[in-house]
Image (cartoon, rainbow, N blue to C red; front, side, top):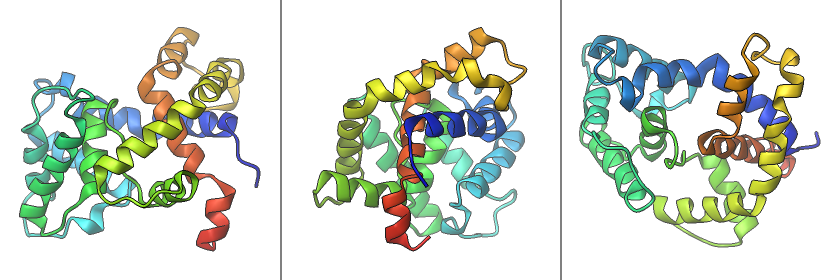
Length: 214
């Protein structure tokens, strides 16, 4: 099917309202003193299921499930910046490796995104293959992934923001139907939102789908 930034903007708006906004509301750094560890751990499990990383964090018999991952996430007490974001993601991945015996880079980036959003960039293997093809570069590790991701994002940022700016005009066709225009504008003009729209664009890319056989 044809791919576009307009469809990616629409699809991420619905995902934000259906799932990510709920995850972020509980796990956000700003809510660290408002939510219990029990509630936070429960929602971290939901993130792991929704983002398909639960299997990479094997059951080690902890009660509740992913308590060690939640505790490790809470160790990050300061919001990241572009100078330390790569180190932060890799640090959590290493902490998860110690507990779950796997360098869970994807899980680490997704958990940290729910806590801080931008400038965290989610690592996804499908997006990684897309970047390999479009950037025509071989790379290994999160640093190169992050750099290539940002390079392609900046290349398309104007188109992405134009697509996001039109979401208010079609909100009755989305899960945002009952949301005030001001709230939608706040979300859709934010860097974290436009970055996730780019993720959706890459995940929806028909070239990638043909190559993967889906």
